Length: 228
Image (cartoon, rainbow, N blue to C red; front, top):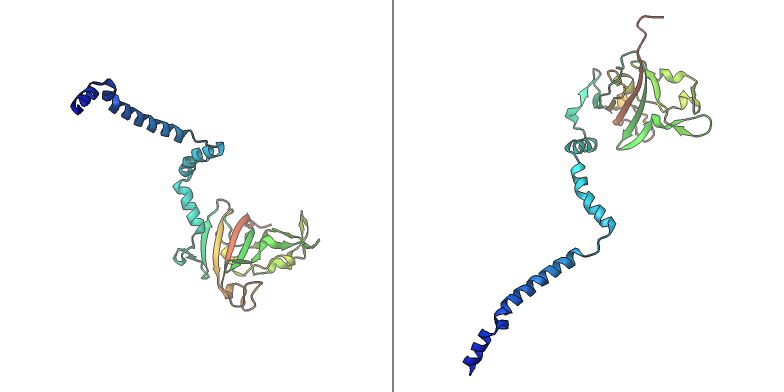
């Protein structure tokens, strides 16, 4: 009896089709799952973020990464050059304009930093008309005795009346170390106490301290070699 039933099942078309039906149903389930996966709602913001991600990664060039590292790194002491009077300096940017020669009248911006704090800066000059603070370029003669230009009483300024005495006092090192710079150049200098603010100090710079001087050369007026 069991053998007869088995033969009937074997001869039944449905029985022969069962493996095909099972494989087709499995394939359908996989296809439906795939369709459900890709039919999930994705916002326009998500599409934009996903599509822009590869572009953002490609747009970071090695040269820009090198520039970023250069701006962040601490300059090793062995990379500094030594001036004739013994000051250590490093040109962050060389500049492309006229060269500051001894006797040239120059305009600069300078910042004196002590342990990362800006203690003295030409970007914080005071006006007599009120207590406003402006970024006033400092003008002096390269190689001149420090402080000679501060004997002026008043200087015309488009923003108001400006007193040279109210300008921040630069360290003596600036008067010599600017020589050789080009307009547009930026130079950082290690200033020892004897070329800085000595045993008196200045603002956040304590007495007898070594600090960092950053100079940006804005303009150069070459000396009149022919005479007047």
